[in-house]
Image 1 (cartoon, rainbow, N blue to C red):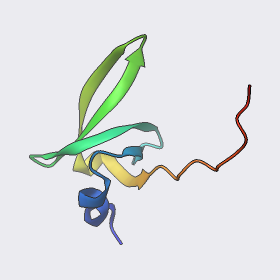
Image 2: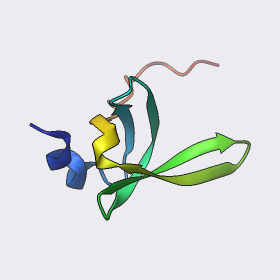
Image 3: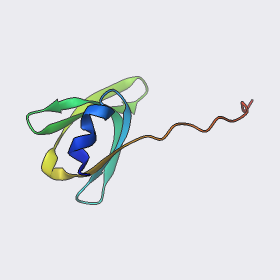
Image 4: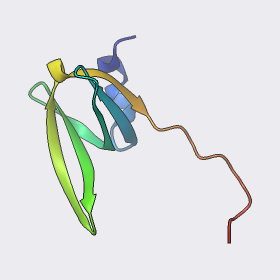
Length: 74
């Protein structure tokens, strides 16, 4: 199934984005606008940036898997 069909289910969730050039990024998927994917990415300290990626640059989008329940590491 093409990644575009998964977008409505991934909005508001952390995702990994694979680009056609072999690079990637991760962040929270905020939505879609004008053929662009809107991803909120962490920069540093307490700074975040809403970045826009053209659909033609994207190879795949995947939601993060859930964390495995483990004993707390203290």
